[in-house]
Amino acid sequence: METKQCEEITEMVCLESDLQDGQMKEVEVDQHKILLVRNKGEFAAVGGLCTHYGAPLIKGALVGDRVRCPFHGACFNTKTGDIEEFPGLDSLPTFKVKVEGGKVYVTTDKKKLNKRVKKMCGRVPGVSHTVVLIGGGPASLQCAETLRQNDYGGRIIMVTKDEQLPLDKTKLSKAMNIEIEKVLLRQSDFLQHHGIEVWTKKEVKSVDTEAKTLTFKDGTVQHYDQLLISTGGRARPLQCPGAELENVKLLQSYKDATEIHHMSAGNKAVVVGTSFIGMEVAAYLSDKAVSVSVIGSSKFPFQSSLGPAIGKMTMQMLEEKNVKFYTCNGVAEIRGENGKVKEVVLKNGEVLPADIVIVGIGVIPNSDFLKRTSVEIDSRNAVVVDKFMKTNIPDVFAAGDVVSFPLPLLGHKRVNIGHWQLAQAHGRIAGLSMLNQQVAINTVPYFWTMLLGKSIRYTGYGEGYTDIVFKGRTEERKFLAFYIKDEEVVAAASLNFDPAVARLAEMLLMGKRITKAQAQSDDLSWLQLP
Image 1 (tube, rainbow, N blue to C red):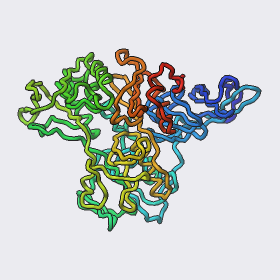
Image 2: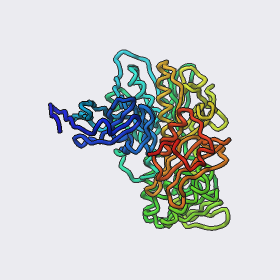
Image 3: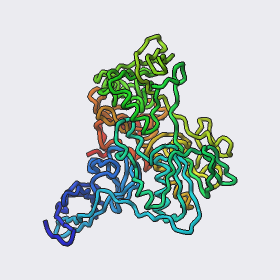
Image 4: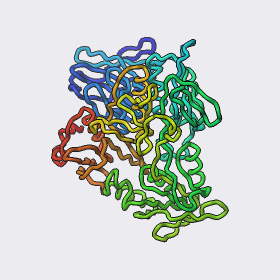
């Protein structure tokens, strides 16, 4: 240890020759995990743990002055520490670096935390301009914080039909009994301090875009100057006799998650749907319910999105935990007794005993309240926006799972994608657009799923892929899969192959063309894996 002055501590962490340009190293100073980066001969030091859920950034992908988290894809500038891609809300702390006599010194102080909140203003008295954000998810919250980070001093009202403040809904299918405090994205005092009003249990009935007013289901009316539609999607209900029975559950809210947890414990659970929500719920319940049965319309889970080989692997993982699968099947009827589920009749005639049925068969964009407006809605109920998250109506913006937006990766073809990271990216762009800062959406989809402690990462847009090239083996549960369309890599998925997907996301973002031949080659040096 070199010096101790006030709260500051300076330590020699390595030799200058230990790091070459484009390399990073995790060092520790006063119990702070710090990421030391060398780029163009200059050293920089930032917090070493991702602000989203604490992943070690040393295991991520470094490209220039930017490091991408290996777990969920958040990106940080290694010079400023600022968050540049989501998920997560906060930036990294920065640390002073000094090079002297061929040695590298890093200075920290005891007050530094693992996260740094970007500087935000509050509401300025006397400013009457009002932004209303419909929806209590990541797009709304990111929009609100972006406005405050850019000195917007007007009124911000976030309206949500949920009972809680904005929370991390990605956790609800993975840890269904989690305490509310652990999933809140921001505490109420933080929101109050920055003048972000959140109206819970409040649902919008209609919008008058000419008068610039919202009418709520309780009859109240609110004026807006600018509006964000970020109402997300709702779970698609099951259409069959008995679907209205009491113990048939959709997972949409914190309350739903806790109810499913309690109603399944020690009981027979049937999960309908083999996509991400259904599979995560089945995995979670595998050691809590007496039995878990999963009904899927395809031969394997995730068959269209991730392909049959990965689907088969995930199915085997759950079968090892005694989860039973009924594939190429569907629900014909749910039978009950005294208003509660008793059994599920499959389309092939099989009957499964059931105390609870959890349905995860897709999502419908929440745009019905806009039907009487001139806001453009596509054939799938999604709100149509341009690259600045603007709708066809002045001062009306939209973001998140409810929108169809132009994806640069697809030559700006419009898509509707329900990813958490994209919702935040949309919210940021919408906030900047409200302030007349014209920044076009430029992001690469990044997604993850967690099953029994194993996390599959995914990046890109693989719809319509015609081939999958594998590195590693799904049987060994260690692989990297490249999705091919028109002889190019359009997406990738991995398990235990970090930071391959993070690295590929950066390459796709930079517009680099990756050919099928590159993916097939035994030489993966182009991916620059450690």
